[in-house]
Amino acid sequence: MDLKEIWAAALGELQIGLTKANFDTWFKETAVVSEEDDVFCVGVPNAFAREWLENKYRGQVRQALQHIVGRTVDVRFITAPATAASTRASAGIRPSIPAAAAAASTPAAAGERREPSAVLNPRYSFSTFVVGSNNRLAHAAALSVAERPGHSYNPLFIYGGSGLGKTHLMHAIGHAVMSRHPRKRVMYATSEKFTNEFINSIRSQKQEEFRERYRRIDVLLIDDIQFIAGKEGTQDEFFHTFNAIHEEGKQIVMSSDRPPKAIATLEERLRSRFEWGLTADISQPDLETRIAILRTKAEAQGVAFLPPVELMRARKPCTRARRRRFG
Image 1: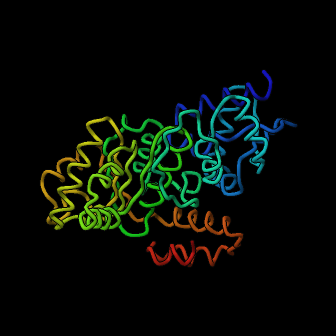
Image 2: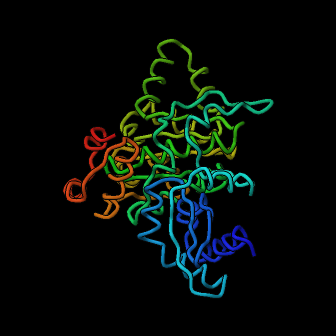
């Protein structure tokens, strides 16, 4: 077998023992660059992926390679994004999530329907989301929804405290859907925006335009849905919007700071619908995950932290204010 075939076989073994989310996140964009003196050099997209694989998966990768080649070998991870991308393209594999700018600049397919468009943060993609034990279920569900919107976990309800990554996942789903399904129409909005636009439509007597805007889409992403609680008119409008989208097999994703059953003054008919699909929580990350998050953000901004500084910052709990200060 040549190096490409050996690595493909090793990936097959690794895939058996890993969750789909972890495999897609850490191994889908890798490639063997070289092999010399029984040391396999594996190219990875960036320095963070290199360090994570070295610390977390080196033993598993080495064992998989040894099983394939039938001898004792070692493995090194190197940063080689061009090589990984080339291998991925030659194999006909699309990146798990491309850069937002690339998705936005991709020409529309013939008969493109993408309108209305979503206003998405280009920094919030799956490739920049750090997966830990605190958010693994939510991340895996988000990946599944992005792959097959309307079929997996509909609706998907993600909840957790402020600053833990709910909005990041919402935007990542939007980017992924627009990249993988160019004809699908995506709408991202906060519940506050939904409420304000609904009120304005009443004042301007343009309710039908409002309903057309929110109901003729394929993926609806509503952030901070808990804020519609207690607003009778908004709840009624969202109830009918939810029904219209869901009945057509279109995808709904919502985020909240608490699960549906804990949202006071939320109408029961909405509460029950919010629980139809999957409810996934994001809890406070452990110390290792917080360090990984800090390193990812530092790398994106070209900032280098010494280990003691990393440790000191990571010991502080995640909050939205801290996320904004550090990006």
